[in-house]
Length: 198
Image 1 (cartoon, one colour):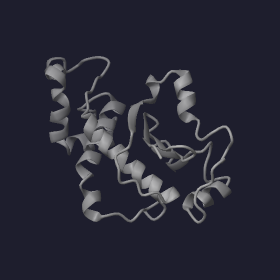
Image 2 (cartoon, helix red, strand yellow):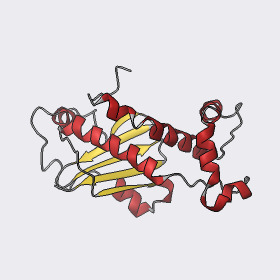
Image 3 (cartoon, one colour):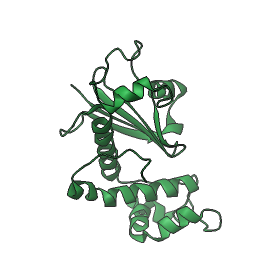
């Protein structure tokens, strides 16, 4: 996919995240359709992904104290995903965005990694999350020659400080005014924030 932003990284390091990314993909499909066994006529993509990853489905069914095994038809649908697997994917993506956009290689662990469904945020929390940067817009400019410099000069590149990779599927923002903060929204469902203090 030539149209997607790409960053050169260590092949071994990048491939080490494949199982975690696959795990998150399964979690998102299950949550969005409300089942670990979706109807293939209604949800063909989710059914194919989840059927192809039975080991992930089995791990998700276990849940705390086997809750989902005892109550298979629990309503509303509830999952207890492995937070470490999800966190590793979020941090990997955040590092890639920071390096790609502002040329910051971030090898150390971030000070903050959070993720929550957008629907669980209060209106005030949602406004705070969606707001990018400081009141003095672009008070601190990125390094000259970085990709972000070009983005700032292109009015269509960012909407409200957000860059959309694929509408409805993935968008991200970067704030470097104080700490380096990378926010992402996955499938307009999962809100994430990763921060490195300077």
